[in-house]
Image 1: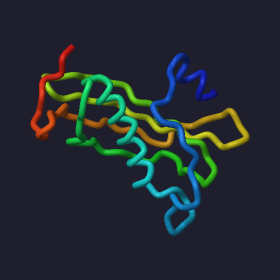
Image 2 (image 1 turned 180 degrees about the vertical axis):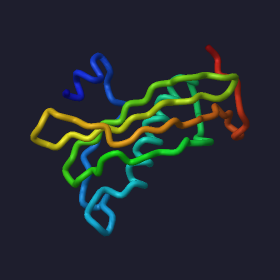
Image 3 (image 1 turned 120 degrees about the vertical axis):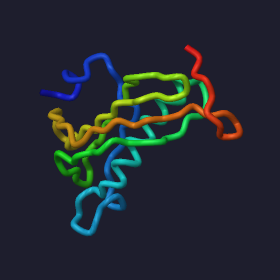
Image 4 (image 1 turned 90 degrees about the vertical axis):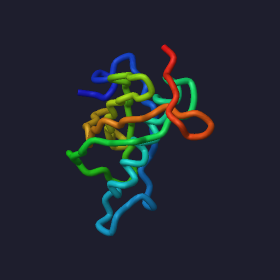
Length: 128
């Protein structure tokens, strides 16, 4: 199944190509790089939803399902699952696609918790 079929009607929050500088000592893409991209995608969704600054306060456990190789296109999807007074839980999935194919596979997923904050860094109410 193609990524477009799986995510019909949804655009990724971030799409990036994995480069040689993003690898670990074994030549695979470093897991921390992927977590960073996912955190950025969740942060974009959190800031847009809360209409202001939002910060990461937690991330649930993550399991790497497939490796990402240099040259793969990585698409990260973020969807807000739950909104509290000042917090949001955002489900994030990362998918990889080799450059010359249409087939994609999910490489990992996680849930990120963000809190909307004011200019002094204090939690603020999310206006709905």
